[in-house]
Every structure is written in structure tokens, then in C-alpha cells.
Amino acid sequence: MTQCGDVVTSEPVAGAGRWHLRGVRPFGADPVDVVLDGGMIVEVGPGLSPAGANILDADGLLALPGLVDLHTHLREPGREDAETVASGTRAAALGGFTTVFAMANTEPVADTAGVVEQVWRLGRDAGHCDVRPVGAVTEGLRGVRLAELGAMASSAAGVRMFSDDGHCVSDAVLMRRALEYVKAFDGVIAQHAQEPRLTEDAQMNEGAVSARLGLSGWPAAAEEAIIARDALLAGHVGSRLHVCHVSTAGSVEILRWAKSKGWRVTAEVTPHHLLLTDDLVTSFDPVFKVNPPLRTATDVEALRAGLADGTIDCIATDHAPHAPQDKETEWAAARPGMVGLETALSIAILAMVETGLLDWAGLADRMAIAPGRIGGLPDASPDGTRALSAGAVANLVLVDPAARWTVDPGALASRSRNTPYAGRNLPGRVQATFLRGRPTVLDGKIV
Image (cartoon, rainbow, N blue to C red; front, side, top):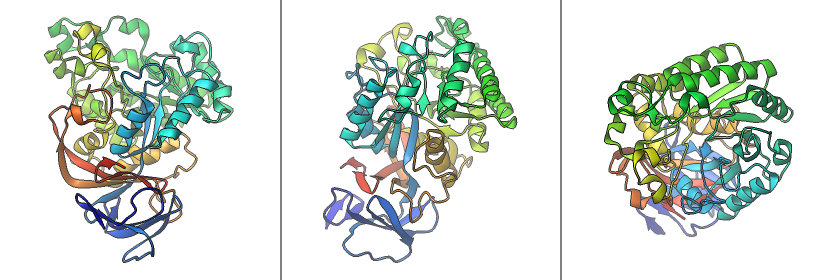
């Protein structure tokens, strides 16, 4: 037997093999034993004793489906000084993620079959979690001509989500054409909702704080106008629209209206928009500069309520690593973005579970089931009821709900250190992550 902190395992611990997770609590329910074999969950019940299995004593740990992040920036190819697929997926596994969707704003842009296949293969070779490339909507993210959507969809990477994230597809005709194109293979266009003319030179949320600091403001209407336009287009075309990083109370209301029409519109919210407000910008610390900007406490309250009632479908990290020279500079010159893969679950627990807005099953839906369904994962559970049952793919995360940990930027697996939570004590800790029955994390450490 080997001792791994609070987790006891029997040899060997490497490889998928056969695993007996003893005393886990699926979705926070009563303890049961779970047996993993051949990449699948093969048995669930009390008092199991499978022969020849690695034993993980999981007393007190919650079991949730492996988390899925629809919005991750892995930076490779081109900006390996900020992140690589290997380092980013290590961070993802430590955060409980078994699948991440890698955004297209790499260098070169992921706008061809060749680039998306490169990203997909890098993820497969790293092995920490599945990497699903997001293809660009337009060539070079320039918003002029559609990228090779069909070629990326039929490539080995099997792209189903397309986004110019970091740039808005502001041309309504081009957006309509993209929605029409992906409808043929049930793809989804993920829009970065930012009307460019309304946000020229914007430095933060437009409001009382921006007026006091003398910084040019980004009005909420710049986000809301694009969401309203694109929801109308999606309804007209009958195609799938996904709205990235929703940040305003008005956006929640527009999404609620669009869904009441039966249109195929989904949306995500980031952990930082569920917790942080624009008051933090008074420090002029560039770590709080993000796109879209941090909003008001009223917006935070509306976002939490929208996530709780299902108007917002899921949480996505918008993990945005930056090299020091791009972030540790004066506010106006700093690039927007925060790292978030390793802290996402804890922030969600703090904002949604500890406030009573979601239970563990609800959190699992918003961080695993719903994003898997939106992203078109082949093994996605349609409603989550079988995600931790016999016959399901063995993608799961074990969480210690009683643990607390302090964020140390220097200890993060990401190559970048731009976390807004440095020194903050957070609830919940990932103890183990399994990818198709193979442990990628044990006792909070990469295997």
C-alpha cells in the first residue's frame, strides 16, 4: 500500500487499470463504492469488493462528473511563453477538468484544419485531459471572410464549436452566414459579444467607478446589443448560438427572453464575473483587467440568479494566461485576462454552493453536464442522470468539500501567474481526477 496524503491507494497507481473508489459521495449523496474498469464506470453500490483493483479510500470525498470548460486559452501555437497545451492541461486536470475547449486566437490562428489538428494532437500527446479545439469563425479573426468551417468540422479534431473570441463577429451578414453554415452539422457559433464602436479605447466597465477614476468606460449596452441581434439571427436561421462570458444584468434578461422564444441560444458566465466587481479597479492592479470588464455588484447578483435558474447554462473559465511583460505593466497597456482553471471550482463553490443558490448536482450540471452537451461531446449525458452510473464513461473528479486552500500564484501549474485570487483562502479542493478511468491527479498532484 502507498500513502498519498489523505488518500490511500494500492499499487500500481499508474495507468487506467481497475479502480475501486471506496466510500465516495456522488453529487454529495450517501457514500457508495464505485468501480472503474476499461475506461468505464462498471459498478456502483455499497460494500463492493472487486478483485485486483487499485483501492482509493475516498471517505468524505464528493464525486462529480469530470468538469468541462468551454472556454480555455492554451496559447499554443505561438505564445508558449504564456502557456502551452501541456502546462494548460496540467492546470485543467488539477482543477478537476477532463475536457477543455481551446480557443482559436493562437498564432497562427486556428482557422484551418491543419492548425486545429495540431492543437488536438498536442492535447492527446500531453494526456492530462481531452482538448477540443475551437475553430475561428473568420479568417485570421479579422471578421471579413468565413474560415474553413467545413474542413475543420471534418478534420480529425472534429470541430463543432467556432468562435472569434477576443473579437466580435460584428458584421450581421457574416454572422448570419456562419450560423447557416454550421447548422448543417449541428455546430455552434460562440460569440464574443462586444460592439466594437461602442468600446473603442474602453478600459473598464462604464459607470460610477470609471467616472471617478477617469478611465474610458465599456457600456453594458455594447454587450447586450450584440446578444439581442445574434439571438434574433439564431432564431431566424434555426441554428445554435452560444454567448461567451456574459457579464451584465441586461444580458441575462435578453437571454431569458430569447429562451422563452424557444430559440437555440445558450450562454456561459465566468467564475470571476460571479464574484469580483469593478470596485477592484481602483487599485489599478492590471490583474483585474479582463474582457469583458468586471461589472457592478448588481450585475454579479443577476448573473448568479441567472446561472441558478438556468438562464445562463454553464460556467466557463475564460482561462487567459499572459506572460509577465504583457500583464505586469501600466493599466492601459496591460492585456486583459486572468488564469482560472485551478480556481474555477472553488470560486463556483464560494459563489453558488455556499450561498445556497446551487446544490452539488446543480453545480455538476453547470460545470460538466451542460457544457459537454453544448460542446457536442460524444459521451455527453443528455441530462446528467447517468453521468456517475454504471455504463458511463469514467470521467470524474473527487472533491474534498471541507478542505480550504490559499492561492499561491507561484504554485500554479500554468506558466502564467495572473490570478486575481493571490493569497485568497478558498473552499473545496480537488483530490483526484480520472480521465476515462485513468488517474491524472491523485492527492491533489499530477500523476
